[in-house]
Length: 239
Image (cartoon, rainbow, N blue to C red; front, side, top):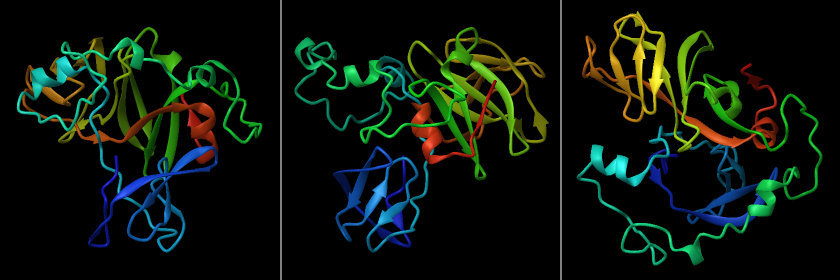
């Protein structure tokens, strides 16, 4: 998620239908410049070189969970393919990219990628902190939904819920206290130092000594390894 404001001007965007490094490009209606949706940077046109500000967004969760925690939410649109029970109709659930997801082919151009640290289509949680990049393979989260790690000398908590796809990254400092997290159950996790219980969707402590405190969130993305590595070749991989 990006802010649409650049140097005091608000831009509106659309999908250009063009690709760069096998990823779709956006364009802005004001200058027709082309923007990478992965990096947020303009790659061609009057705005070339300008950078959209990354905003931290809420991880992917079910509508039921969201509505429970944020009952005043307004829904932009549910479209015509949602039935009265809030479910997608079967005739609209077909995935046009199913063969692409199931194949080992990377990209549209046919380019072969040489970063063999992971398989091309292995899914990872991509994290960027202070120009430092790290990929966390989904396989890391088979037995536990959390990883305590350090990136750019900043202690971070990486959360990925395999069943729902929910992902979030937080700073492990609250005030001057450095926390280590253990005992995760779905979206809830406990810190070792104070035994406070935290909600990893909201980032807020719900029980314990630190109740009401909020963890600082960092941007993160679920993405294929080949796409992450191609845009961020200096990335490290969490083992």
